[in-house]
Amino acid sequence: MRREGLVPGVVYSGGTEATAFQVSEREVRGVIAEGAALFDLSVDGGKARPVVVKEQQLHPVKGTLRHIDLQEVNLKESIQADVLIELEGVDDAPGVKASGVLEHVTREITVEALPTDIPDKIVVDVSAMEINDTLQLSSIEAPTGVTFIVEEGEEVTIATLAPPRVEEVAPAIETETELVGDAGGDSGDGDSGDSEGE
Image 1 (tube, rainbow, N blue to C red):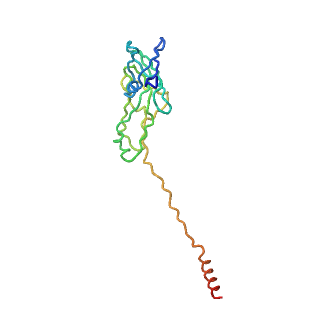
Image 2: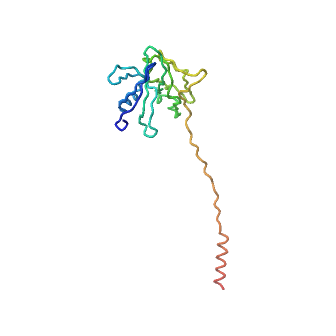
Image 3: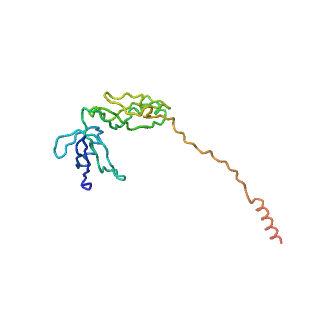
C-alpha cells in the first residue's frame, strides 16, 4: 500500500466498532497541511462523518506519513484538540528592530470547544514586544467559544525577546619574542676566526 502512495488508517467513533480505511498520502497530507482541525471523512462512498486527527505516525527518517488515526466527533459536544500557535508582527517588534532575539517558545496549545469552533490556528500579535519582554498565554484572549487547557497554576510562555547576542572575542595574547643564540653565534664566529688564525 505504501509503495503505491497509500496510507492505512483507522477511524474511531464512540460506542461503535473502529473502521479501517486507506487513503492517498498526498490527499491526506494536503488536508493536514491546510491546518484544518475538523474535516469530513467518507469511507467507500458512505455518509461523510466529521472527524479530527487523533494520532499520526511518521517515518522516523523520511518524515512520510505511515499511519493515521481519526476520531469521529459529535458536532454538539465539546472536544479537546491541539492547535498551532502562529506569531505575527515579528519584524515590527521594537525589540527585534533593536537586534533583539525573538524566541517562539510554545508552538502548540490544547484547546476545548465544539468541533466547529476549533480554530485552525491561534494567531498571536508580537509587534509590541520590547527587549526582555515575555509573552504569556494568560495575556492572550481565547477565540469565542474556545477555552485554553492549562494545568492549574501553570504559566505558559509563548515568546520571549532577549537582548542581542554578543559574540565574545578572545583577547589577543601578546608574546615576547626572545632572540636565542645571539651570544652563541658571536662565540661561534670568534671560534671560527681563531681556527682560521691558527
